Amino acid sequence: MSDYSDELTSSDGHRYRITLSVAGSPAPTAAEDCPPVTGAATPSRAVVLTVANQAADRPAPFPPLRIEMAGAAGVAPEPVFVRDQGGACTFTPRVASIGPGQSVTFRGTSPVEGFGPGSRVEVNVSETRFTLAAPVG
Image (cartoon, rainbow, N blue to C red; front, side, top):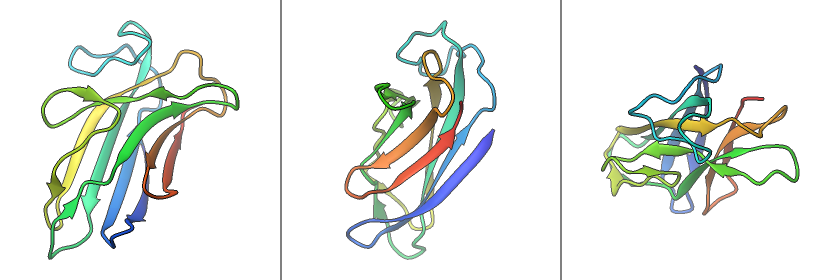
């Protein structure tokens, strides 16, 4: 797995460290993984998203983020599904808040089919211009 991380400060001053880990090579989707949009039989890459509250003294609301596979210009992005705390597969995971100095982790899979050189898994936060990308193609 290759790790990519960056700091995010929300518009209301909460600080987070967002880490995106992506497997180095495609593999069949495991039974417990959320299948990619293209189907469980399609090779995919394991994806792990961790969001950490950097404040040691106060909880932080979970940032409004989404995870997608993006390709070259003209290729529509596809959702990257991760399992949320309730067990559902989503590309917009949420929790009510993150405790002081705590983190939450989501695991899933990325679509691979149709994405060539220059493709990447992206985490985008809708309230800001924050984007964290992990190259996969």
